[in-house]
Length: 127
Picture 1 (cartoon, rainbow, N blue to C red):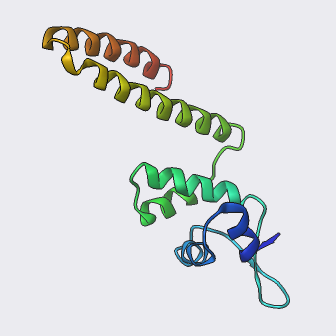
Picture 2: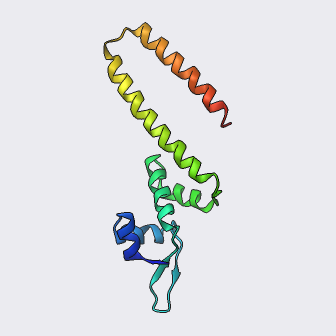
Picture 3: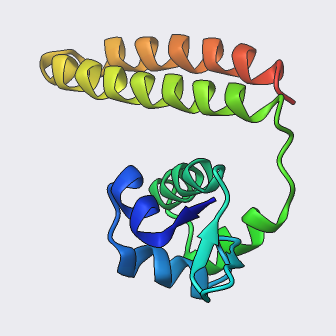
């Protein structure tokens, strides 16, 4: 179990932010005999999940709902890996878009069509 200061130090967040997340119901804790809030070791994973969900433009209320759904501990690590891959691909797409600024509209359409078709094939595996 970790005290709020330890969670802040390990996560790089302020104690105030952790306190806010706790009050919003995003983080579970227990009270010690001395009335300190004690967070489980997996609180750092929860904070990473919150950070990622915020990056997906979810509100804290939406995140609170999402956090209530139990995650499959075997699946979640793969989800984070896929999310990282998506992030890398988004960066590559931005680079490609910058490189295509001087490309003709017809060529752009062909490239986007090819990318879209490949993406559809990949996404079908997840549906």
